[in-house]
Length: 139
Image 1 (cartoon, rainbow, N blue to C red):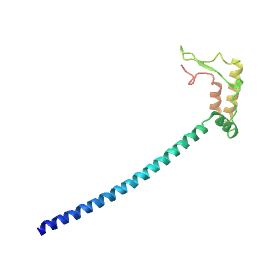
Image 2 (cartoon, rainbow, N blue to C red; image 1 turned 180 degrees about the horizontal axis):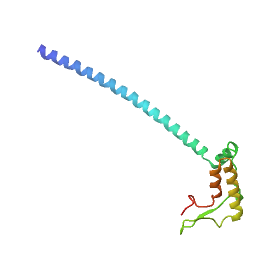
Image 3 (tube, rainbow, N blue to C red; image 1 turned 30 degrees about the horizontal axis):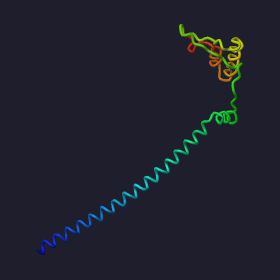
């Protein structure tokens, strides 16, 4: 009988230790879960702030203002705009009908491209003279 009592007491101690260790493990897991949930909440707030910031940065007026002020960009004038149309039948590139003055637009584009090309070299100047032709120069 003493042996049975001793065996049962030993079994009771082992079960008690198992219970204590499982409760400790559950407590640690709960703390980790709380930390992960808090981090998820912080990340969600940060994500919302980034989306608001992206929306503000992507507004056309802000982009236009930055382009004009910081990059010294300006809107292109109609005189410097060259409308090109690709003929689907033969693949030929021609000046489109929407150009206000076809020859003046071609000359303006060629002369401004030639001015720009003069600073880059002779090969770029040849490209500027052929700017109105189809890229590659061959059919």
